[in-house]
Length: 170
Image (tube, rainbow, N blue to C red):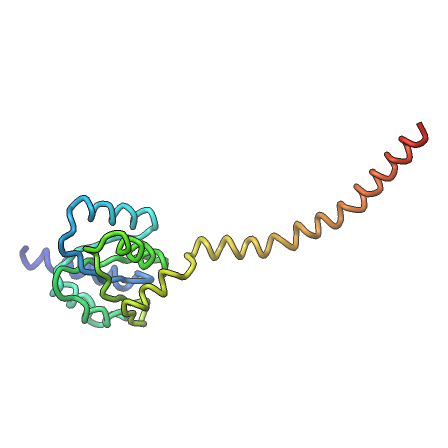
């Protein structure tokens, strides 16, 4: 890899660290290509990405970034999982690590906040952006449907009373 390629990788990593809601660093020693492809596919489904980069280049890219605390985890065979959604990458990596012993979570960062292993697992336990939006929409929609039901109820009651009277008269 020549100097221009290294500079390009550092620039790409810098953009990743700057724009990601969460970055999770893990060891992947012993994982097969198929297992890594499976992890990438799961991350893609959740709206995140997985990146393997040289630790030295990643440390250079982290210089001056809000998540610079991640650099302490960049030793050995590391993989970076990241997503704009602050929960997605942590959730996917945590679930995958439960299934595959070869993937070991080291830590991560959420913005300026450093996360240890317990912190990554706590973030993974949080609801995702889509789940939060769905619950908020449900809370907003429930009163409206209750009001519509209350408004429509007297009319249906009157209609049922009239039909009962009509049946008795006939």
